[in-house]
Length: 202
Length: 202
Image 1 (tube, rainbow over the protein chains, first blue to last red):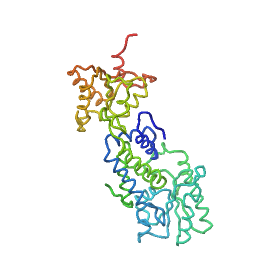
Image 2: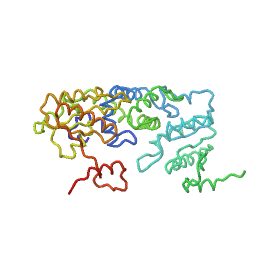
Image 3: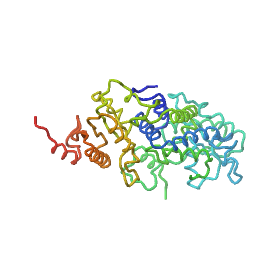
């Protein structure tokens, strides 16, 4: 820890600790520290309690890894959801995004991120064996791969698809193309190329 | 609190609590929450403890309001600093910025922000009476007003200068002008106008 001259240990420790938050560097962390200690001590105490409370009550769903406060999440417990279709995503926030579309009524499986050998993230680290166990034990007819359309997300989808092919399970990948409401002019050429290749006859 | 469908109470509470941090809206708070609960539980626990520790140990200096972990801060205790010159700033971070210049060896007084009637911040709320008491009780020869060069900072400096004039204490304001290393082309016309009016004969 960098103990800044003129700052007490408690302040330096807080500036350091805040930098674990995504997108927060040393300058933002300093600004947050002053704000919390000078103007928002009540909110700061509430924030500390909220972090502790979430850490103590929230855990990954035993079945699908979605974060929840019971043994299994509400999507796995819900009797109205189709247990034969499984959608694989990279993060709990992707489940929420897909739920907002109100167009999917199957189950989910949340990976712990994506494959990234350079960061030491192999199949075991992101819970792919747990996914295969789930697929083998349950009568699943289709696995929809909805990892992010990034290099790592594509590689993760490709890896899972290859492995499931040997288990004779149908896999599908969410469609790539031009996003609704956008302008072609602003789109990257990679996406546009994909949209052309995957064009549909009307 | 907005309880999002599909999210446990603990997660919603944490997303809400994180939004007390400056510059953090609902989307960033969600991203931070997933990061903390999915990948960084140890760092999250450390962050909660650091906030509690800072709140329990850090307090404003009895004399100057600088945040510290003793009754008075190291600037007020330091025997080598000139007790006759007082520099007034808006925030503890401004003290650190001025200390980095290594060109000022007087004392400080940290206001609790700036005057802003629209936000209910009058002289009492930002501790101006404590400043006047300090100035009256100690043999201070000059008060340097180093509030920010914003509308509110200027108004605060002006208010303090007017009040101290009646106490026959010399006040000064940090210089406005073109910042070193910049280009005139990119500077706002207000600053440039100031730099022209305040030009110095060589």
